[in-house]
Image (tube, rainbow, N blue to C red; front, side, top):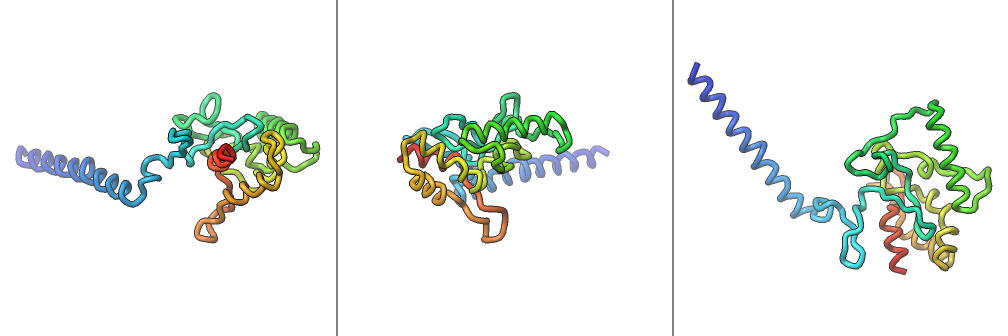
Length: 190
């Protein structure tokens, strides 16, 4: 019996060293060598200072900036430590009221008529509540507001939207998207 316990303890020790120490060190080392930007959080910098991660949505409310998706993560939204959706279904009255209110706000902020269709990504949170991207259509309806607030031409702002629109991954996965943080940082550089 003592011999069995000794072997079991040795196996536990060996597997702990392999899976708890060696494997994580190898994977971390390879990630740092092959994908250093992503392995370090995909941080975005402005004037040499980190301003956020390109992979986590942020709350932009100033009219000079493009606004991203609403967030249901955390009490006030955009809390990366509390990632998650609202868990409200499409028949939930509170959810429907919230979406209608958000659509009215988007229309008011962007000078749109009351019957203008608002893209769903500007009025509903993603599953994680932290999606950093919006559709090109969602960016398009904000161009006039941002251009006016920054005293820029609409064509110049639209050119930036076009420049920061990413296509489908590998040409067929996902949908075209615009990273809101990257676009807003590019606007600040103008």
